[in-house]
Image (cartoon, rainbow, N blue to C red; front, side, top):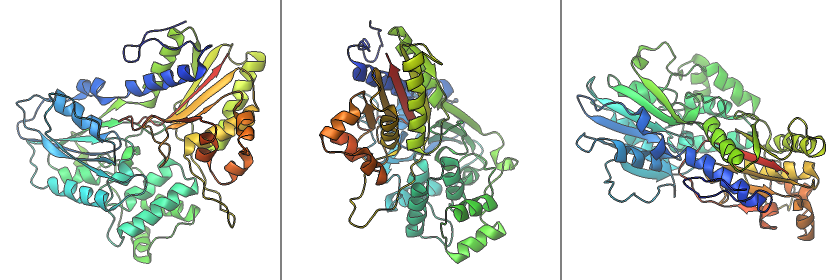
Length: 446
């Protein structure tokens, strides 16, 4: 039972090679989100004046190269885009470089990201109404485009960012805080581009595809407030310097709102979304003779708990063919979170990201369920800060881990998904994919 895919050839038989089949679905989903195949349909015509390209995100390198390949060769094009370290793909043959690409740190920002943000803001000086600004925005831009508000240092932003990441706050909460503690996010970059026309081309990595949340919305209006940011900081017990807190309390750090005239005439285009990638994977599964069901592209929550819910659904299908008949694939996306557990004295530090954490919860709740295989991975190819995209789960995962001396509860206690799945050869390693439409999960029930 095979199906053809123009990028990857025939799909492996899911009954003979379930892991390879799941990987195939992941590759199809990622391929659907690559900029070269999606960017062209959303490009405006060259302006009377010049075209300046600005941007940030983990897909920045591939977005820039796609734009350079698609923009008219005789039309001026220049600018600066920042992406994550080691996320610039090899340059396609015959495509000359016209836009500068620089690299910085993710998920905790560094000085290179601050320097890039300062340069990007400086490039907006002198723009006219005849000029066009193309903003290339993708997930990860919040960390890569760091420009602390007055009264904050880079060290302050690094600490606050790390505490938000460890707190279990969802992406909307994190980015609300980031926007109000920045001089470039939350619509401020668009304000700096006035009076030029701004067209934002974005790849969504957030539940709901809200452009104001993607990379903390540097070019779109922000409906959240200073009061919202304060409430989030207080909810998770995160301190900010007293002068900055006073600015939040007074509203001095407020962001441009949806009714601000600075956004008149601006456009925002979603060139790739999580739902589109899940639909591509579902189509590939059906072509291989396996019915596919998409739960949602907006699933959030604590990773291990979301894994348990997915396990309960898979077990119901396996035992009773409800709510779906076997064989089938269940697909989902979104952005789960991980709350870092306190380490006990002498306990080794855990490694891993939200995809691996979800797989630990999934494996524990499946309890060795026969005929169920799963893959959870981040579509950018990096699960957190590790070198894997995610992990596989199989009917014998728990047994093989036990034979390797690995106890699931110990690894859950210290958020060590990497160590658990590495010990049994079940890490899923792809390297950077040069796009990012967030979590990808596929459960195969035969």
